[in-house]
Length: 378
Image 1: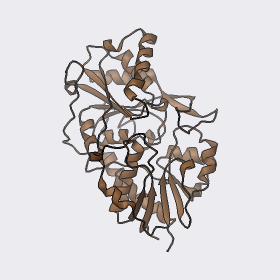
Image 2: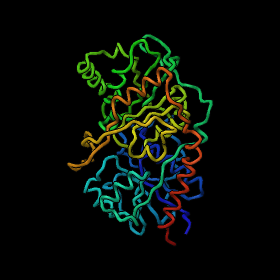
Image 3: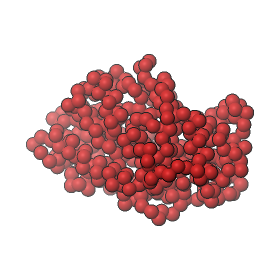
Image 4: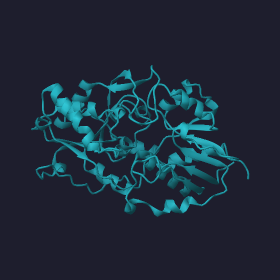
């Protein structure tokens, strides 16, 4: 049967990538003609988008609809049971082994949907029946990420317009161990000099603590370890502002490169959006990056396995043999130097490939097909 109505539950009023993912999937599914009810998970994000950044259309979706399928975007143990409805949960994982209590919780859903082959393989290895497992990649807004966005201005402490620097490297991520800002800052500190015509723009996620302050002990420790001050490297500019979805293209337009040193990814929407914006891409050669990047469209960094660790106060815990994948420091330094000196090997833009294959329309169509397997006549 064709999916005609759908109940969706997930965070959508916050600034995180998960909130953004729920908003975009909801928009695209509704645009495909499906009648949608949207239920918020208000405890997901520590902060809400400011009122002026919220789309009131989402609030209008609170009314019940005649749905027989309940799609949720959350961790498996957070899935809400439903009477007389088939439950599908869209989730992911970024280490080599799924927590046992997640595996147990997954069995209450008729389908578990993940964005990439890397997550699929991890869940399959955990013992999830492949008949109850599907892949549905995420997407980008091909109307929003188009050439011509007006760059955002960024001023240094001395009033310098940092967007006038020739090489402007961007990273967007929450300050958690998996995102590996420490590795990124280490590579930048060691490789760059004050005379380099470059800047590193770190847009940090909004967590329970001031993210900029959280990074301060990291930078101090790196300076002590390597005997070099960040004042003697090319500048690092930390961005804590929240941007509306429609403003994000302006952030990417302010930069020339996107660099991730992440230890594992379920997808990485900012990398995908950077690709759609036409930036030069530098990424670890692991997990979801292999779904949409190739050596022809990105500088891929070799990796080595390291032990995965629990992240702060989240409820995600790793088994003792779970691993992450750490990007090679020397390779990252070489990629940064090549970007600054303009000596990068010829890399084709990933933009056309991304916009031709990974839009939210593509994602929603695939997701609707998957959920139609569960649709029951009412």
